[in-house]
Length: 336
Image (cartoon, rainbow, N blue to C red; front, side, top):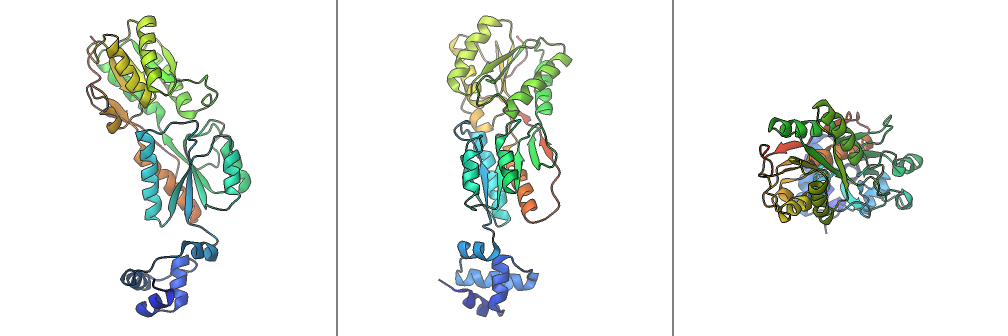
């Protein structure tokens, strides 16, 4: 393996200059940087991450804290991870996934080991214990999601108000006046303060009222089986329903299959519109689902960039809300 001295000799610089570049401890001019990087490529030099961390007192590793025990992994979740990892790599950082719980206990233990420079929080609760842990330990962090109190917090999130408004307006324009929102199960203690479910429910109640619609919200857990069961509940308790808005991607697949199993045509009898889904998941359904496409790629990138700017001492990115966008499929049609 090539050494730093060999890189310095090939580039015509001192070994100290190579060290400045590798450890990011002093600025190196663009022309000199180009010669060093070319020498590294020609010699096949690989950076020693451990040595770099010791020299700079930084690991250049950031963690995405995802409470995997509480939240299932879906295709839309994977998009957040992959776009975040790509954004980190572009800025010479490495991103790791930390499947730690929402209570902050495990997160505190991991932070005490000095493994990462900062943390990106996902699946944020309205009152999130992890935020307190990060503040107490002085760990830089950014959130993909929002707590109730946002003063001084770097965050990006889905624009739930616009997403719901666009979905309801789309169905309303097709003549639908009997809607049901299949929301998350806020009685589940893991989710009673889960920001997306609370915000979508609040937005739907307000927007449905603005359209003069009867407000019907059915809570449903995040599983395909729960979606099956909700389909039966909708038909029993609200037989006049013509369109169903669904919060969770697994439940959306279940409710579509459940309606068909009970003899209803989608979209001939009822339309189904998931509020947060990606095209790959929509294509698993027959018919292929019309969806509000989750902005996971944008938010994963923005959340990571916000954290890295903090770590690098750059001006912070302003808070940003990104709505889901309508992607037509075959599960929504005019009112029967």
